[in-house]
Image (cartoon, rainbow, N blue to C red; front, side):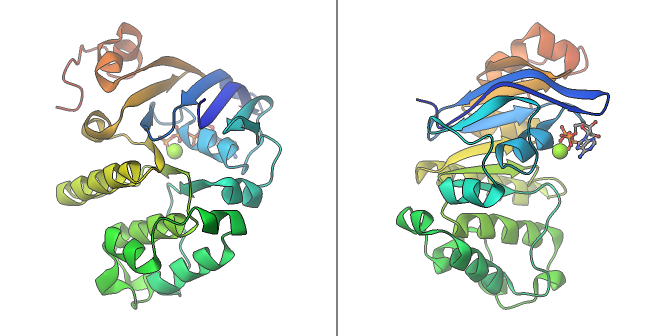
Length: 245
Ligand SMILES: Nc1ncnc2c1ncn2[C@@H]1O[C@H](COP(=O)(O)OP(=O)(O)OP(=O)(O)O)[C@@H](O)[C@H]1O
Ligand SMILES: [Mg+2]
């Protein structure tokens, strides 16, 4: 059974149809990539999964349970974590305080799933040396690390990363990839939205491509890179066997 499934999702903003029937099925422990051009609906998809937005039609199933009508805090409590495209930590607090608040507000069910102590979270997000500095004084990559640390503090079973590598250097991107692989090995299912193709190619088991309101292709990164529809719609009409290279 899929850990997360979206079925026939439809969503419009006024006259703008973002989803015209989107289906995605994510197996447990996978690293799953969602790609698509700007405005394809990747963030909207995460917003619907997390209950920030409601779909017009269709459903979201988490471990087989329909969560489409549940409020955001219940969805988080069930085990869906999320990192936003735009960083939103509590800026006047330190990383350690941010993570403590997140852990304190995690529900009882989440505590049963605990995989990392707060110290371990600080370490794997490279924040140990900076955990007492006010978050507003940190660099953007470190603020993004605080976002990841907060999400991990809630003990998610699956975590959605929305462009957490945007604006990072090569080394920082590499360390993000390592972190995601580590989370996956620890039994946390990872869903990533990324524009960096190398990232997708290196870490994803499966990828779905969103285009014009639909998933136009799902498969391994290699399968997706060879798909004629994806090449036309997303890769600028050029064949790209070596996606990301
Ligand atoms: N709350 C909203 N109200 C109206 N339109 C919206 C809203 N949220 C998103 N949109 C529109 O829906 C479309 C999909 O937006 P979304 O942010 O999901 O795209 P995206 O794939 O995440 O893009 P990007 O790669 O730039 O982050 C865009 O045209 C956007 O302007
Ligand atoms: Mg987006």
